[in-house]
Length: 124
Image 1: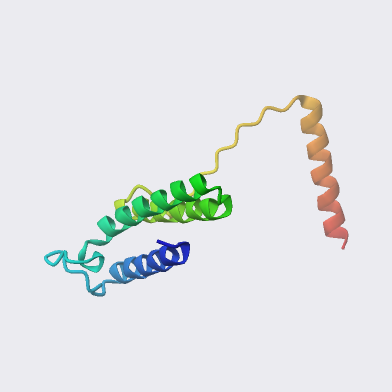
Image 2: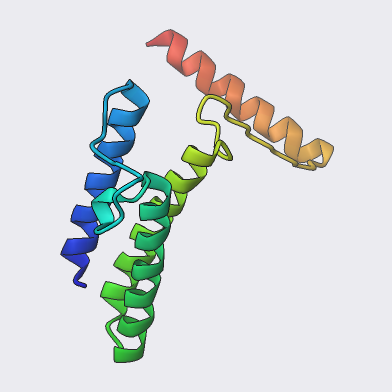
């Protein structure tokens, strides 16, 4: 499977996910499993992730690192979708954790620089 095919399939799955979130029918019927379109969206994403990993492994073995990196990017997007669907990823909550230790002199220099920039901005 080529990278373009993987991109198209990921786009189709994203569109299906958007339709599901909007409450529309996706056309997926869990009773008919003859092709990929009949599988539930989560199963299709997992299958696509496996295919993408296989392609990445093949491209690394062939030395095509550019294609391998593209596969890594697509795999991260697929895993993000799986996490969103499973509720493991909450987009509404953003956590920024910062742990910094400053000595008094560095803190004073930072504060002076901030105040200087603030005064310059106010003068303009």
